[in-house]
Length: 202
Image (cartoon, rainbow, N blue to C red; front, top):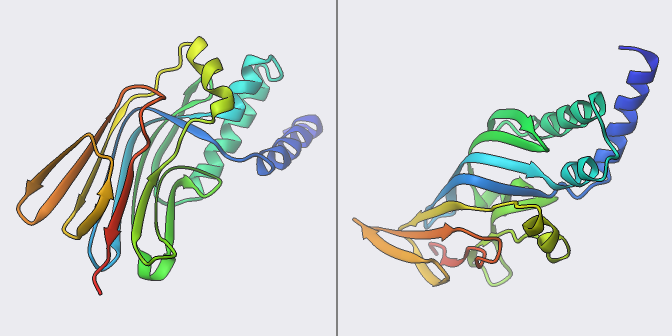
């Protein structure tokens, strides 16, 4: 690595740390299992587009090797979370990813994917003591621009739980034994983000 390329890498890293880490999903399947005692598991397979990188490429601020340098930095940031089993850069700020993680809200209190700085799916214990599942939304200030450029957001979200659900906005619901299955079929950026309130085991 030359002095110039090393300087670029350091500068790029510093810039990335200042960003909000916003990602947009596409062609994805996400699933979550939530136990009444607060244990959960989450899986995601599909694509993630890094918004800041996409915007900078679109504005011509990054070219050639610079794009690859930033793409690698964002990939390395994701890989710091061991839940990422695959992170492969495709092009135009898009990554193919596979992710799987388990946890317990009694210990961690909150889980966000892909990160707290830019969540697409999250589960937490709220102030009322409910387990709250929330999805991320496309920022309103860039939604029009993304639509104009032909960006498509689509995928499926599935959540299984045997706990009591207080409220939800699922597109469809069914039972599988003692488990409730809640599904969202997301086809546009305007689709309501997944929301659930679950009663934990007392």
